[in-house]
Length: 181
Image (tube, rainbow, N blue to C red):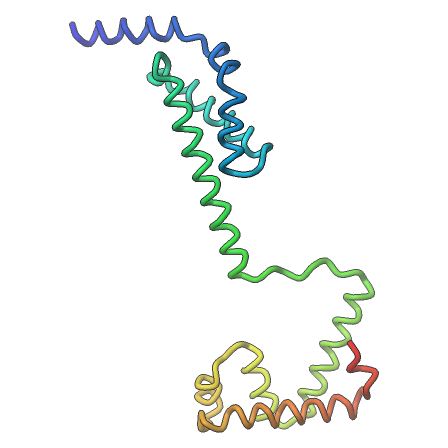
């Protein structure tokens, strides 16, 4: 018997709840509330619509408590969106931003510069080239030393000498003109 009374009460609440009227009465305030959290009015409107969509789909939230329910849902959606944006930004920063779109001339110049570097590295001794490549890959001195079977205390000096040899060979092959970039 209690189950049928609860069902009757829910049906009366649904019949008394006018979703369209509720939406018109609360949409603007909810969108403004979300906009204060996310800082983007267009995104706030999207999230407000999502909050109302969730309300429309959840008939148990209709009735006297619908206002509180939709505001709470809207604020949660806004906070989740804010956290998601922060996470995306963090991961984008960690991965490094990709290179900006290059003009054809810039792309050609970059390819030419990479070819110059390859040729200079090929002209260097094997150890010097390996030192420069491993260090430019971000390896710390200890790992560079382990990879090349060197004394870790001498890696810094050896990298400095390899850089000098690189500069000397680059200038020999391409002159000052190639180094003006």
